[in-house]
Picture 1 (cartoon, one colour):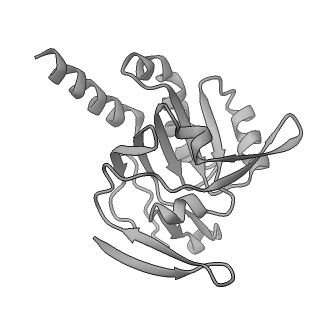
Picture 2: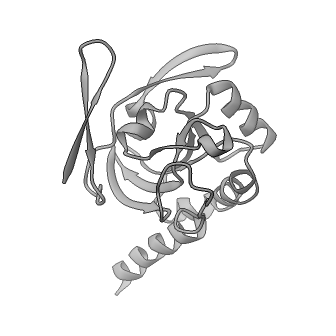
Length: 193
């Protein structure tokens, strides 16, 4: 396990645990500001993860091609199959503000996947998944990944290869709904043997 010290606001110092294997670790506890019914609502990690087994997939940005044409619709379409495999909820996270995430959810006509706006990138940073996308004028964004979280504890991670800043590549496969489903199906096969 490697540790990286990052200066936070004021006199606070945030310690980021940078490790390849986050399995069995607690997700970062952060606060999110979301817009619901025209009002600001303060939520936090517990709102999304406490007492639930969920899939979270995080991506570089709302309205971007791979995210809008493949990843998000794939999870939306497979939501019932994921429920059959013990998933209570599916969340899509991006380093975008709540207005953008809500507009994207409406544009995509989401009924099953819920969006989480990580507007300041705090959750993404504390997961060690924040990267620069300056080459596309995106600023700081999330590297593409997915994870299964059980009551706030990471059960399994699906991280796209090659995480680095300003890469022209946007790999997609590890975090796809098909790959996450394959993992869940393998668990069920193991239970029936």
